[in-house]
Length: 472
Image 1 (tube, rainbow, N blue to C red):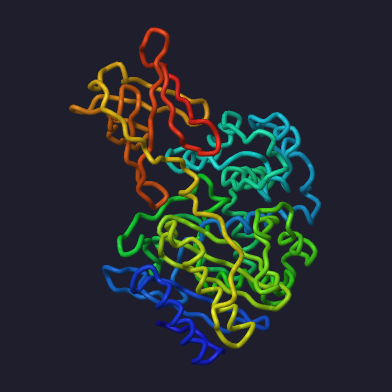
Image 2: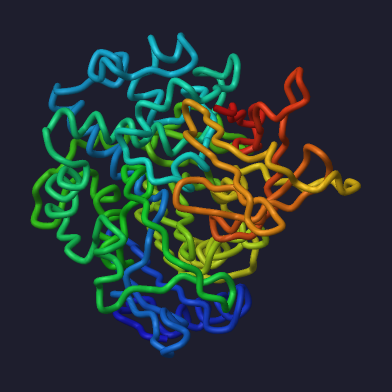
């Protein structure tokens, strides 16, 4: 344990240590915490290891990937422009980006920045598109018209989407004539003094005190989120993220007394616009819920090998930030670091911890949005032949090739290649490690009228039909 500052006394520190010891996925799980009370930072510290092989400890200055907690920064940058009259939340995106197009004609014509920032465009996640390939932001933008939506969901259903946040960032880039990263740094990070925060994987690993990523005790690679940067690219420390949360508790006033954003514009960000479920709604880059009757504004972040929980209670002057270098596997959803945060809030509100306070439910991590099985058992089909080989294309997802590799077939998606395991004449699967987890991905070949392979389908987005790649 490395305490940077503590104004809550040794009793609080023991509660935190006890919660971590009980809830951590594996001994010495790395976690940094910051607590704001009465409008001031009252605790910051690190626990566990940021680098297990080198036995290097986490401290309050350790830098982590915050994942989707980035979204509120993009939302604020846009809210600033709305407040200055340069953008409008309720104007169709096409008026700002004429090339904006989705497969749903209504969403194409009517979708606004407000729709984009509160996840009600009707477009499902399609996370495999940005995660598994080398497409940059512009290439992803022009592939949107080929991605299947959820019929009838536009403005009616909350459907979390990283790609649409990338579109919002693209709009900022067009407005300023510079990168989204430059906008965020100039308009938010610099005014708040968030000098330890960064906006690329290269900057993260260049830090002398960054956290390596883990799934339990096994190290897993950190992920470059540049192609969906406005949705998930920020890296930060709990000390810097405390400055971010402090801005909300101080009603838009930065350190030194300068107003960064108006109180009305700030509050609009954490006013619920669409229901998520279980009493939780989503505003402009923030989830809105309650804990023990208290309004709680929060956002989790699940980057490969990292998990974050950024939160505040605007009516009570409280804020808690938890950054960890443990990947949010399914067994940790709502547990780590969430339950550590819940115990801290209970202590802050009641002066003791009885385990009664629970946080609003959060979304499953990003990996759960890729349909991968289970792969059905089936009798082996005939040996793989050249009939399966070739180039297969989808206008949104791009090109997949299948080629012989010794006695097996390989499926190749840009820079990645996996062996195909055959289950029947048309059913195969490949083993994929993505989103910090191992999974088996089904591949179904389609036979044309002549009995030859003319397409293959992979369920890369579980809420729509399997993505069909047509043989060239």
